[in-house]
Length: 329
Image 1 (cartoon, rainbow, N blue to C red):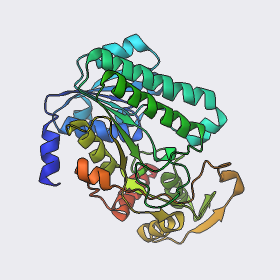
Image 2: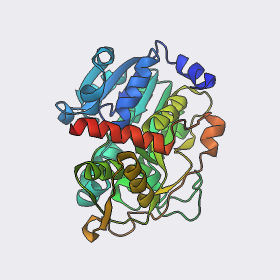
Image 3: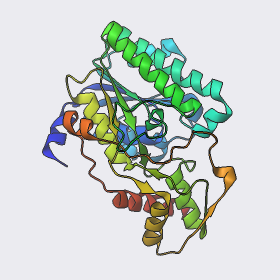
Image 4: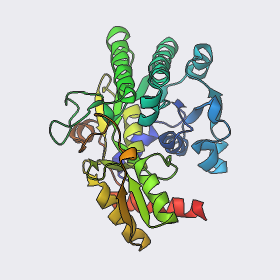
């Protein structure tokens, strides 16, 4: 790990940090990194995920004991206010984050993501938090008008989920400009790694590859900027620690793109197993909710966050395959 990043992590020692959505895929790894840095972490987990979530399921017991776990809902403002009280840094990752769910239930997803973020921002303002990191998504860009995609690329949300995240961004910026709330907005691209939902493309492919030889997909010609989860976490921790970046938006990605055919080819190499690709229309997303190519510009994050994705795509894919292979056994 670069020395500069170690210095950044030292800034979290004895800081009170709140992570909403800590029971989710990225939230679990972020919480562990903050615990390792000496932060006093309160993890907010959705009450309906009390029995099954990544944090209590995957975090080593000795580290889990160092986390203050709270179960709740972002729509419960008074409880949220109590959790955030005294927090130096708030990482807001909690969201309904499924594109298919948003297509099936747009009202519920938009209410969760927009109202939840509004409550979070209001509570952070009332409590005087020093930094609020808001998680958005690369989905706000929609189909790319050119590559790589920089932060000033036009936004064209192609799903209710992406629209809800763009709305949350605008509300956060409104709080920054109106109340000087110190917000930073991150747009992660396609993060992958151990513990991700099987509804995501890479875990879905891995699970099919481990149990058979046929890989059923929707669109197979698209490319994505796949970024290993620990790289994404390094972007989050930098955004929570570096000074004078309030009101900024950053892409957090690898800066490269891989097709789904490449993903399957790499998994074939890892498993030493020949796989057959089957494209099914029923797995394709409707309308413009599925962009053809995505590759981020990470120049702004490199310059202002000193961000550098350390884990390569193939290394991250191998770690992820190993994780699901162990789980299958």
